[in-house]
Image 1 (cartoon, rainbow, N blue to C red):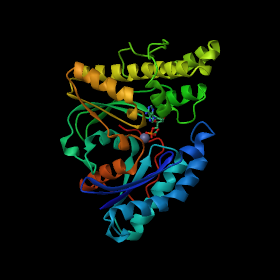
Image 2 (spheres, rainbow, N blue to C red):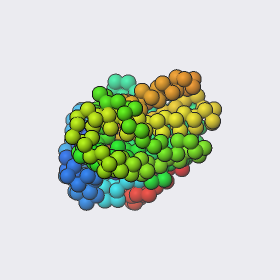
Image 3 (cartoon, helix red, strand yellow):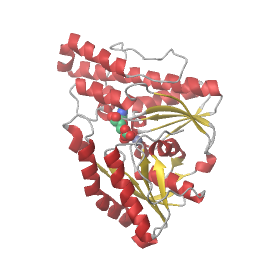
Image 4 (cartoon, rainbow, N blue to C red):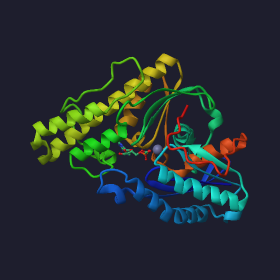
Length: 339
Ligand code: KG4
Ligand code: ZN
């Protein structure tokens, strides 16, 4: 029985995992706290984590029906992320491990996202022993990373964003349209009844042969478009068309580059994880493109796409089984590289 914390950004989460099965997950989101600022304010996030850690821990233990003494291990996200936010969860977990005299594991946030497509079912269960060679798209508010995963231990970064992350592009273009932070889910919803071909936005780096991404140019072209067509924001249907067109540009780039890398490397599987992998058009477009290319696809279950402690706990359990303990005085690693 392992208790895990995730506090790398703006979600405070605790989860209990046992032999790959998620027995409980509790998440306290800070979205409203940061909404007025248009992004996450690190100092506010850290304070909120300190306030929420005990309540989410109690909720997870209650849901799992266990007392703290029955925990056999403790884990937390060690990096990358906002330093003060990481510190809250990591130090709480290490203190608990010290008091209970249990082993501790510090987990790489993106590695946990990378493994999350291999968790499924109800209750969610991890089956990392069945990981097939794959190309994996980790796509969130802070990161857009394409990874070649040969097996559990062999991971190589193929490319990443050279400027804004895809989620950031959703959030920043949404802000230009007057949508609240984070705008990704709202753009997804508004796009359902919008025309993705209404406006033509650039597909940055789509035709380049490397695996890097760039989204800041797209954001700038939306800014100029709105400067030149301010009336669009006064017409509900045209706002939905704009959302659908921006979303189509982002999704096109993500899907084309992911599938192209998978074909080039000759892997049989594509996976996707991270907050943006909740996006309905992205899920659908990946499914269609993989089917056309004879690739199998594993999309992370929706409740595991955004930041959560269940994915941290499942990977931590696996690492501890393989003897990979982290010292109790280990520090946060805000800029920890994935591979
Ligand atoms: O993984 P996550 O919870 O946190 C980070 O590590 O960043 O991802 C949050 C990001 C935000 O940028 C949010 O706008 C985006 O994921 N997001 C979405 C959707 N749901 C969340 N973007 C597009 N469509 C969605 N349905
Ligand atoms: Zn994340």
